[in-house]
Length: 262
Length: 189
Image (cartoon, rainbow over all chains, first blue to last red):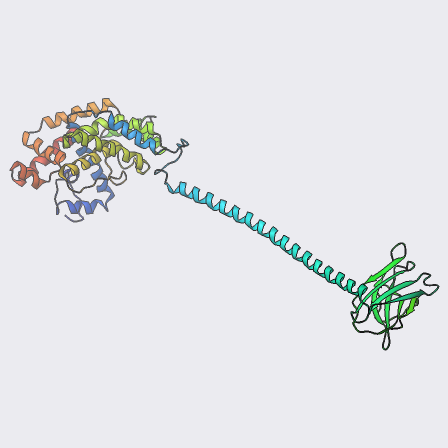
């Protein structure tokens, strides 16, 4: 009877009742799996057979299973009382997902805060290093000045004004061995495109630039420890008027000059 | 059959029809589940008690079946069968499995076992009316036919097992069951 249409309603009823065995049941099961019409006949047969249940003596359950059932389904309800969810009960992973998301956000926030603190500390360290370097440089400068001022080899040279460029004198303290120099003087203001420049006139060779400067409003001018070579025997010192920013060699008129006698 | 389908179609639109209650169960409305339980628990419990004759076990199966309704309501396809039909078949399968201590189909999926009842059972009056018709048909059966069909239905026996228990020839058992089913079919027309 394989794959043939069972032609009697009782065939489906016998199958639904469960009395068929092995070779009797399998062909029907196989057939209805692929035949919608016979599947519907089986559905109808199940309904008729199920009516036999009505012949059981009518009895009522206690109240307990009803209460246990309702307790069971209410225990699964969402805490917010959300009744709009459909389908299977809430998976517990949602709670864990929320916990992990919160923890991840907290860790990210901590990482940002720590990064900002680290950046601020790095900036402070860099600032402190710069200050330390500046202080070291200042200390070196001041030690050099102290050496210049206290060395017996330090010479003082007065610079006389050269009219009409200058009317007041200047003074240079110079130590050839240390390569150190301090200038102080009083000079008139210059035009914006001009600068004063100090020169070391060596015993031999070209004049050596010793600093470009401008006087203050009251005419006071000074140069402290410019970068000059050591060991230069100075014959004289001079201040000239040069283009703004100075020149590598004197081109302008002299404002002050003095013989070193060194 | 036609009158039953008409009645069912008319009842389907009612706010408290099986379909509308199932739709509310899908929305997690436990009061709808309670309504279905109140409607069909007597039918299910009576059947299971007839099979197991153990109140505690019967109530356990009763609770499990309705909890399955709660869990899988969205899978139910009304075009494939009725809810009371599913309940009766599922309860029978579980009870017989427990009774005979053999593995069976214990988790009947609503969309896998269509059971089309010939009548609407949503009201107590409808259940009572159908009960009277079926009981009358069963009472009209000769003792041998009634015994055979009850052994088949309430104890899950096959032809051979019934023949062995009743000490009747296999062919006789098959004839008796066919005859009983024929009477039942005609009573439900």
